[in-house]
Image (cartoon, rainbow, N blue to C red; front, side):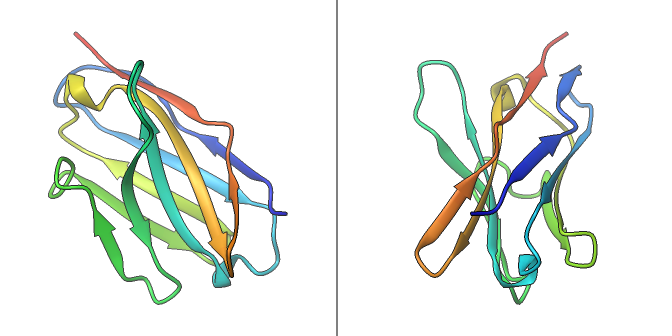
Length: 115
């Protein structure tokens, strides 16, 4: 099972930007469908963005036009560029890797958007 380690969270003002990273400890990273999820206090975990092995991307309606998901297979790293952040983006963000019915989660990184 792959190990996933997120980084890049923090406190940012509304309108600001952050870039999250997720390093995956698997030699077959290029075969994983990768995704970012988030969970706010008292709410269910929700899909934020997903990127396939062919780099096809999908986004939650709430982040379209503001967030960009990408992957670097050589570095075994998933990214989430978050621009024009809003207070409602405050949550713990989790990296997710899926391959042939098996999946792994990272430990999460906190993103707080507040003035």
